[in-house]
Length: 182
Image (cartoon, rainbow, N blue to C red; front, side, top):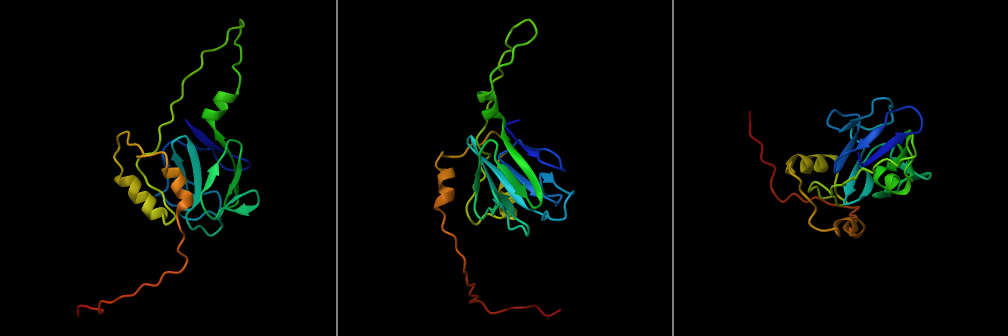
């Protein structure tokens, strides 16, 4: 297990055990949170890019919060960071970081236990840009090969910050409205 969201109150622990973890009330989500009415059907996604984790609100009504501020873009999750999904509070724990930073504990007899190697696999081929929503992420994940696919470059995480947000979009329909009569 590479990372977890540990609840700071009611709720259950969330394992981040794949490249994209969808969180919400819908059966289409990887993690279904039914304990709160402030969780949207498809609330947010946690995305693993190489050895880093990001959380993105997917247009939820009650948002994703960190430090009293609403997350409007992707937020890089750091070990020990407290976040709120709707009204549920969690502590992000990156087990790989925790294992590197905690000293080994001696077993009975004074021997130090062997240290297990942890390999964190980067991504599953899911691309994430500013226009990604829950349906796009789910469709990309379904279409991604089930083999050990990898991101093409480590610069993809940096591209998250380089995306321009389009606030106003006008749709022009040049085609006449053609309807078949019953």
